[in-house]
Length: 227
Ligand code: ADP
Ligand code: ADP
Image (cartoon, rainbow, N blue to C red; front, top):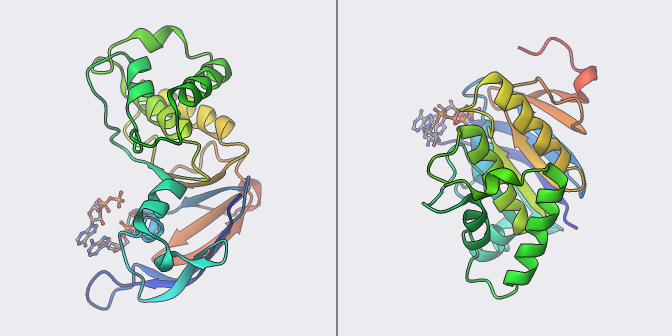
């Protein structure tokens, strides 16, 4: 179990403009947090700080009390698995894509047996069985994103970072993916970045960012007039 405390982050990419201007956030085990806000609000920048791709000007990120900057790069990658708009896939069945690929494929702690067992659990939970024989190069965008999610979960990351996972999908597919996603991340520390407020009812905390600042936070039904 992992707690991430983000305290008063300020990030400047260039010039005087602050991409993040004093953002604080607490991620605790089993809590799903969504960051919403218009383009340019700083959502990707926040994820980039968590993945240690961007150095904040001030403020801190602590992982179970340890400063993120004191963790080894490998540890950060093991802790936080990201899911992007553009999942990597190779020419093989979806099942093989799930069994063979992944960020830590050489990781001896994650044996074939463990991966297969987790894959079975995933299939059972999603009913996503028939499609697993299909070629990864021919499936739809929605299936690709579900694949990416399944693949991320096989590594059982303590923290799951999701950057606009439904971005490239049509409305109906996006709805279905978000449903799956919120279901399988129920017990996990999850940070979801999205500009869609729709479907975020189950999320524990929705944080609205605008111009690098938190302008609202609360459960979906507590928010007022979000664009
Ligand atoms: P969002 O993900 O909410 O669209 P971003 O984090 O991408 O927002 O961007 C926040 C602000 O920082 C924007 O003003 C954007 O133009 C700026 N920005 C983002 N990345 C960079 C970068 N690599 N260099 C300079 N400015 C950047
Ligand atoms: P997103 O909203 O998903 O961040 P953007 O189109 O805002 O997508 O940004 C795409 C990429 O360009 C990101 O890697 C971001 O960091 C970078 N970027 C955004 N704004 C700027 C900017 N003003 N200068 C340089 N890079 C930028």
